[in-house]
Length: 201
Image (cartoon, rainbow, N blue to C red; front, side):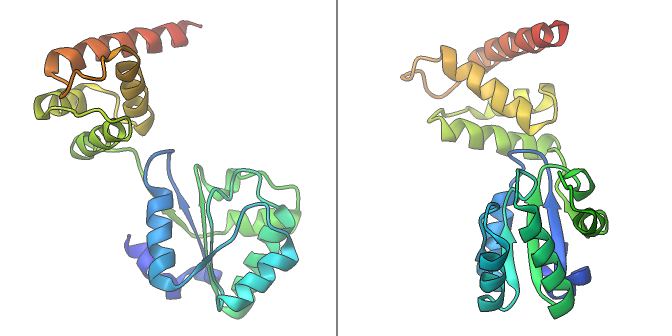
């Protein structure tokens, strides 16, 4: 959060916000865009259109999921503009920019040197929050005891929280709310069996 808020000091006018799916990158990036008055540019935008938006937004722009097939010429153009004109270009992606697809040597060099703000996997306290959030998204009410139990036992990843919620949702009668500890334990056992089967495959 500190690195994102200090956008006027980003090296070369750009920052990559990276982290696993579900870690809140888009939420944080949109909050920054609102605070900074930044404009959002689609990853597939062309170089000229992106440059025009960059100029209109006084260099403050956001590209979400920049690692998912973004136009390489557009990325290179924006990184060049941000460095030359002192912009604030925020790019989000799952992994470090050095691993983003790139066939343009100059772009690859810029990505390798891009400053990074990194979101990690959740600790136990955050895992409870994540579990409640993914359950709310599926209209499932998770009891306090079930949330605590799962946060201690699930793998500490956003993916594990989503997998468990999907397993629960597949078996849960929609009227069965809130989810009790017994129901949560049963869904965890089923999810663990599915993970083991996937590992053996």
